[in-house]
Image (cartoon, rainbow, N blue to C red; front, side, top):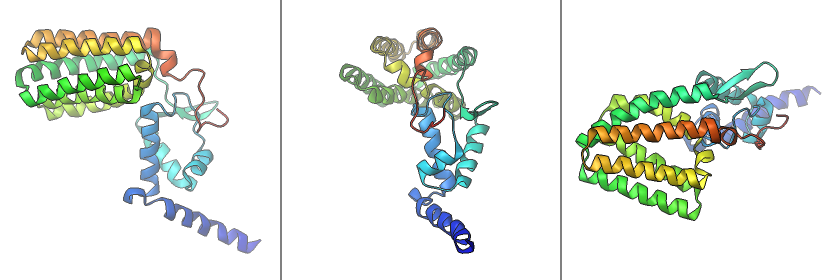
Length: 249
């Protein structure tokens, strides 16, 4: 009995050491990054129950790095404590989504205004290429590639705006929006609408029309918010879906 008890910590330590240096990262950092990415991409749906023991088994680490990772995710409000179910993936409600998109509308409007003035020929080509990649992905039904092209389009605009502060402020909101991209872009009609809205933004930027670019950006963001709240929110929140990391959810 004594020998078995003494062996457990050593076995746990060996398991952690063998798994904790993925890409040179400690276990807690690796688990944190992996869980965060799963939440942002929608692999872990909102309202999914996060059981420390199950996650430790899934990632083949001890419970300590999982506990540390969950604390960090809770500090970012990606994970919240539910009185009945314990820790769950945060599920934003309509008011929160509208609030985030309202702020993002203001930031994106400033970004496209600056981009319309400062855009370079190289950046214009990159924006046009992102739209072509998005169109091709939509035609092929590749939601993952559609999301990537969408992110590229907005990232290039922020880069073209040339404001480090603006880019920093927009990053957290971009992560928030990523959580619902798969739901929105799984709808072919909404995907085509987004493509058309992007076209309007790019045409205004190419003309160096500051006001038109800002107006097109606001139209795009308001349509996205409306879609999520009125049409896409149940799907985006994973209603009726079960995560593979949510036993007992």
